Amino acid sequence: MHYVLAVLLGACWPVQANTHVLAVLLAASGADEHLLAGARFFRVGNFSKALIEFRVAETLGGTGEASWYAAAALVKLGRPEDALEAFAQAASRAPAERDALLDYYRALACYDARLYGCAAKLFAEVGDQSGPRIAELARKARASIEKMFAEPVRQGAVDWYREKAAIAHSAKREALAALYSEEGDALAARSK
Image 1 (tube, rainbow, N blue to C red):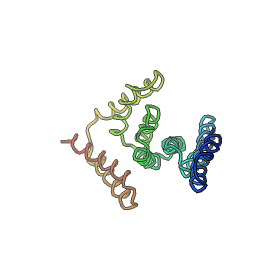
Image 2 (cartoon, one colour):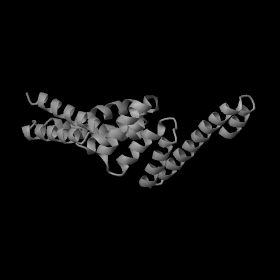
Image 3 (spheres, rainbow, N blue to C red):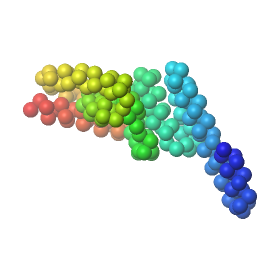
């Protein structure tokens, strides 16, 4: 389809513009191919290959969807902190591509990184916007988090989050540092 569009546009524009338009359209086509390949790998559970394809699609300048899917692949690979950074990057690059399923994966990343306040908030949003299966999973996760929140807050937990924030900050992982800092601050406020 992109090739047909490039040919049609090429008949109307000067030669210099043709080259630029063709390059942009071919890059978009390549990005789409890698996005679809990543989706196929993701569906069959080959998350490392899916991540590679999504990253290639990002590099080729796709619509921004690839950034969100790369973050979801990082969740499935058990890399929640990397996933949270990727979700932050996707949110800044392509906020309109966000949906309930991607928020569910983002909530899982928060949960796996022990950012339970972040996870609870996202699971609550997912439950209102998703289908019945994901809504039920989100409800169960929120119930588990609420049970944890019923326990008294220990200063050691607050210190742990602050230490994680400092480590992330020193590694120049600012999005991650902000999440750990917010979690620690929220726990500290609950302990008063």
